[in-house]
Image (cartoon, rainbow, N blue to C red):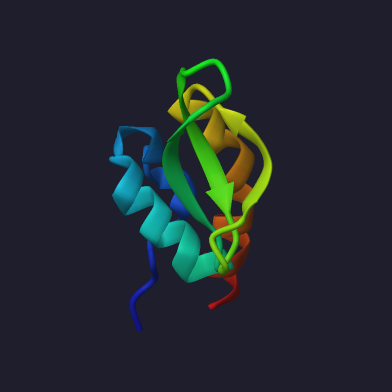
Length: 79
């Protein structure tokens, strides 16, 4: 029996948005989209399975990871 490496061992902030979004979707059903906020600034928006924006966007990718990593870890540790 092999033991999976705990998610905390990974530096998800080094991942590109698409790869991280795919992992988030696999674990939660939500994705992260690169978007533009009301001021025209690049941001990251959490979207549900229907493509609807959820909550306020982030402007720093590391903040996306910090705010969503617990949900990913919970799912990965469940399996």
